[in-house]
Amino acid sequence: MITDVLVIGSGISGLTYAIKVAEKNPELGIVMISKNNLLESNTRYAQGGIAVVSNFKNDSYEKHISDTQIAGAGKCNETVVRFVVEEGHDRVQELIEWGTHFDTNKNTLHLTKEGGHSEKRIIHNKDRTGLEIQQALIKKIKTFLNITLLENHTLVDLITDHHTGSDFKRCYGAYVISNTQQEIIKISAQITILSTGGAGQLFSHTTNPKNATGDGLGAAYRAKVKIEGLPFVQFHPTALFPKIKDNTFLISEAVRGEGALLITKSGKRFMPDYDSNAELAPRDIVARSIAQEIIKSGDDFVYLDCSTISEEEFQNHFPTIQQSCNSVGINPPKDFIPVIPAAHYFCGGLEVNEHGETGLKGLYAIGECSHTGLHGANRLASNSLLESLVFSHRAALDSLKQLKEILPTDSFYEAIPEWKGEHYISNEKISAIGKLKKELQEVMSTKVGIFKTSKGLLEAEIRLKKIFLETQEIYKQNKLTLGVCELRNMVSVAYLMIKQSQELNANVGVFYNHDYA
Ligand SMILES: Cc1cc2nc3c(=O)[nH]c(=O)nc-3n(C[C@H](O)[C@H](O)[C@H](O)COP(=O)(O)OP(=O)(O)OC[C@H]3O[C@@H](n4cnc5c(N)ncnc54)[C@H](O)[C@@H]3O)c2cc1C
Image (cartoon, rainbow, N blue to C red):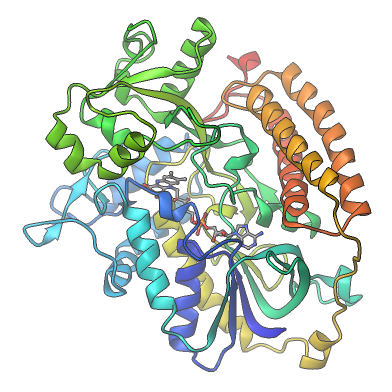
């Protein structure tokens, strides 16, 4: 398959980018692939909303800039912070024009406040903002005749000079696995967009969906594209403790904002012992405090006591949380909610310039898989959807300019070789993949999670090497499947995270090594 633009991933960033390019250029061919259905993504689970300055009476760009930099612990790129904050307003207006509904109050956007924000500036749709955005964008994207949507198609590898034998130092599209047919197809493209989201699945507990396995990062790593900031993984303090295996769900910070308290299983409130802001301390402090209490007590979780919130208020503000808790037999605010910290957001990713382009010409990275410099060492709550919107817009404009340049000819793209690989995978190997994935998650959670030590990082490196060798063995001996693809990527991202964590020699933002405390 040959196209002008290949977009890999259908979250807020991929969808926004594709809509922008298609709107202005009906003559261009755009192919969008998505690992599962178009909806499944980190975006659809976003609860809180988008941080954007809209009430200029009380709020200002300068305040939002300052809040972002404080959260980022002085590690943010100042230029990026400024343009993301300043351009955010127009980008949100476009989302609204494309059909996204945000809650309003007397004809103005209803604003909430989250940790680290000095003003109320989070626009939202109840506690299901991401779903609302995602559904509106999917509806919009389906109106374009020049966009081909391929669901259940997974990126395997980026096509580079390594495959073509050329020396243009560009990306030429990607090899993609059709999840249902289990066959690998070649999609060559002048411009390739990675919008593959985060990699929360590297850890045993995560708020991210199953498909967040860092595939874009893994493929880019194999294509020798620079990846930065991986040690800065934000752990959300309060995810529902999974009674049923893997069934974690985010319990928004807003619940603590409404007065819910954190208590141990034996009933002791502990946050005032750690921080004067108690339950409303910054996320990294609350996550570390809960982790500390869990280590101290040997319990699996702590409780969130929501009894300070009335039933009506809870139902009104947090319908999605209530529904999810009810589905596993918990009935807040009457029942305590068992919670644990869970891997939530990757501040690091593919190093990009101010237009979202990576160091490999023709390859852009937008959204959570990118490292723009906005978040520094810790993301300010609700800044990620904003970043996705601003960088999708910038990448659209920049890549369109590139399409007008002289690029390799059609015959060059036609000559790109097909993927090589014949063998079929056996059931025995499939169970080995599951075991290796679990082992990787366990290593990452215990040694490279909220608390690290230099010794632990070394142990993780050694254990990961073993997992890597076994993964390579499966990869070489068998036909490529989705499971093998994901495992390879998880191993690469885990390896890079360990190496980059070993290079840090001081605690900053969300990075915490006991040896530097
Ligand atoms: C529970 C939760 C709550 C959150 N709340 C907020 C919030 O309130 N405010 C905020 O700003 N941020 C929030 N975030 C973070 C924010 O949702 C994400 O950072 C953002 O949605 C990322 O968008 P994205 O387009 O980069 O990636 P995603 O939305 O994750 O989309 C990634 C896409 O890539 C596809 N994909 C992945 N791998 C492959 C592959 N190999 N081949 C093909 N396709 C692939 C996936 O299928 C998916 O379509 C939250 C995140 C979570 C998990």
